[in-house]
Picture 1 (cartoon, rainbow, N blue to C red):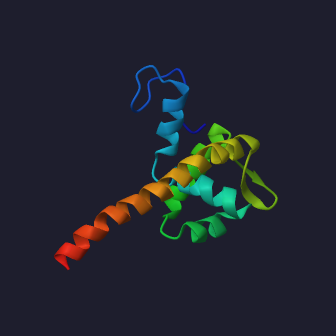
Picture 2: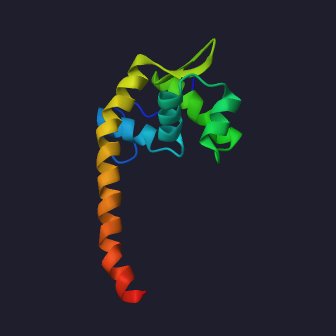
Length: 121
């Protein structure tokens, strides 16, 4: 079975392996959140469809992330391709407020850059 960060065991950023740190360790892996996000937004996709939707992901990385997300119970393989599970959907829904804050943050950073660009332009 694919080894994934497990609550209660030492994980990146936490010797105690608190559940949130184990999840952050898993989702913080290259393309893990992108794969989960893409499947959540686009619905079931074949391996090739998911690779195309993620644009720059290599087949090897995609294969690793799918295995890990399946082992975590966030993604499953069905007749129509890979899809998020109910638990994966819960993770996606929990991330939506963070997505909203990230857009506000991006706007604020852009606003902070405007006076600087005007002075140097």
